[in-house]
Image 1 (cartoon, rainbow, N blue to C red):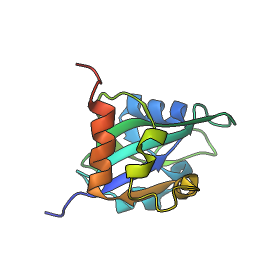
Image 2: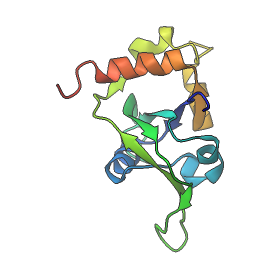
Image 3: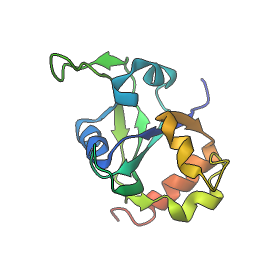
Length: 144
């Protein structure tokens, strides 16, 4: 069996929480390629630069944490002109946390001055140690 990989997916908080509620994962505005790189058992954390899609005010929190489920990438019928690709994911109860206190310890952020640039990719893999750090911070006081 392959070692799990760990992923950051970038989405607005409202979109991320909608995905959590539905038990699905969507990346890069519904593109299939990022989801096809993921395997069942991979860890995923969702980073929300904004609270709501289209807003300009920064939020900059990790908002959801889960595991990619068994099953294929599938296409959803959201509207006649929007059929995004998705995967099923199992999310755990977490506390949303701001990224700023973790910046210096996250190794996937090479440029600490312009750290936001990394998130422009929309979906990228991160080291297991970084995922563990984020998971620990999100679950330390979540739902006792």
